[in-house]
Length: 452
Ligand SMILES: Cc1ncc(COP(=O)(O)O)c(C=O)c1O
Image (cartoon, rainbow, N blue to C red; front, side):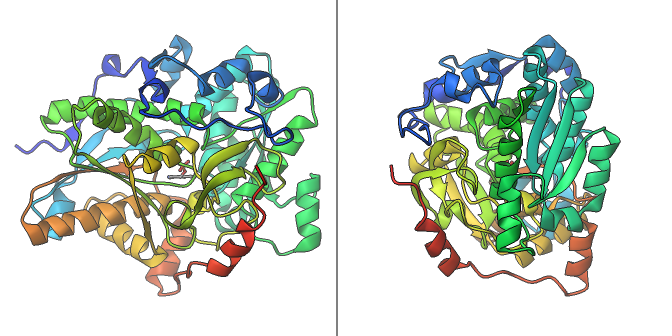
């Protein structure tokens, strides 16, 4: 019998996260204070984050223990399955072995709760009563809504306007868990009002929604801000994905030649890929190809500049050294709302710079074509973001068909697409379109990079 699922027992779930910082061949460039241009100190971040999360940004140790209270919540849905995609392999007529690590089984439907519950937990421990955040497609907002429900914290979510109207069920999910969700730009903050004055029809962007959420948090003593991606501590919490996957590959008695994940801010990709990058760095699996996939219309890694930039439109966040399309860039309204971000996690940026990770950009239509192939072979309907990873996983499997090689491919299946049916409907009705790379807009946005 061919084994399709590799499922770890609850007792085999990793009890620490993997912190790559001490293993990096070259250290990460420092994060800079937006006012002084000097390296940021833990105290600078204290108005926004609890100290334990801040310390995780700079942590010197390789493994950080997952508190028992968090492990208990993780065990609601973790360990998540690793599937062998026999039916997809057959549909593609490829000798490649395709696996996918399936984060869809979390209550919110994606990888996002892995860090959401950790962030809610550390905020609760510090006595924080209220959190604010941004969300693109709504996966992060819904994950944090659930997490805040577990820890009895009030939450306000600023949801990118185009997604707010494309995906109303995500808002209802957030409200079901007790959070408040408003479309961004909103009239509730100065950053939102300024944008509405400039363009009342602005579709919004993650960078702008971050500005609103940060402004709200900074303006109130009882409130902290929570970020769903980009920062080191977020990627750290997500490493449980790749750590589990490595144990599951031991069960399958193989190891991936290729690891593929989609990148928005970089958290799902980082979570999957960083434990495999560990093996590249320590030499135990030097030749694994790790591929980050992004939208052609928002190609941060493949066309962005490597520079210090703000994480948000209103220039409120610290300065991060990253690939960026410019913090004022408004990406086209692709359905993969979680990938519409101008910047990239400094850690993912660094891994690309070090040559440990490759980047590929793909057009929207091709990602939906891949999503349909996946749904019609494996059955599961994937999030538009996830379809980016599936696209490149399929492309690599097709290359194997042509070369006759039997490579092992791991796809990060970051979430389901059950609230993205309008996007599928448009695709099936022939109404979906590709968006060209808006080179002029990026050129313009790059002129507003901070002088460092
Ligand atoms: C299903 C899914 N995959 C991937 C992403 C991309 O985000 P990140 O790069 O932070 O993982 C998102 C973001 O919302 C998402 O919802």
